[in-house]
Amino acid sequence: MPEGAAAERVEIRRAEPGEAEALTALSLRSKASWGYDESFMAAAAAELALSPERLARYPAYVLEAEGRVAGFYLLEPIDEREVELSALFVEPDAIGRGYGRRLMEHAITTAKRLGYRAMLVHSDPNAEPFYRAMGAELIGTVPSGSIPGRTLPLLRVDLEHA
Figure 1: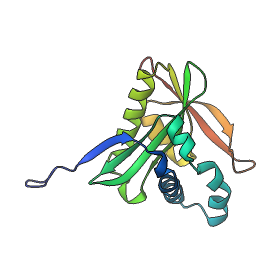
Figure 2: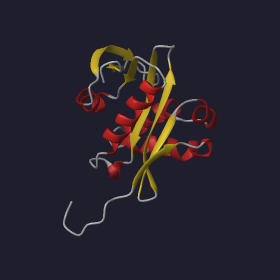
Figure 3: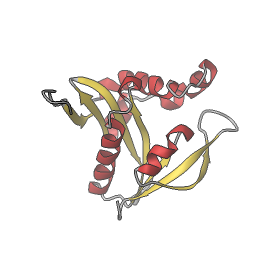
C-alpha cells in the first residue's frame, strides 16, 4: 500500500433475502465480463438467478468494499458430507483486488464450520484456474444447466485438508 494511503474497508457479512435481485444482477455482470454474447447470457440468466428464499435458506455472504457490495457467494448442501459452491461472483470493476480469494477463503471456512468434508464447484471454464489456485482439484466435467451440449469443469475442495 502506498505511503499515506488509507486502508480499504472490506467486510464479509450474511446476504439478506432482499438483496436477491441485486446479487442476480451482479452475477450477470460478472459472467458477462468473460465476453459471452447476448444469446449465451440470455440462456444462462435463469440458472444465475437468485431468489430471496435461497438466500434465506442457505449460507450466502456478500463482500462489501467501502460500503458497496463487490461480490458474493452461496453454498448449497448436497448431502451431510458435501456442499456445493453454487455461486461466487465479483463485480467486474473489482476483479483483481483479492475479493474472490477472500470470498473463497470465507466459503471454505464456513463449509468446514458447518461440518462438510468436501466442497464441489461446477465452474465456468474461465474461472477454473482461480479455483485450482485456491486448492480445488479437477475431478471431471458436468453438463451445463443452461447451455445444451456445453460441459463445465467439476472441481472438489477437500475441506479436511484445506
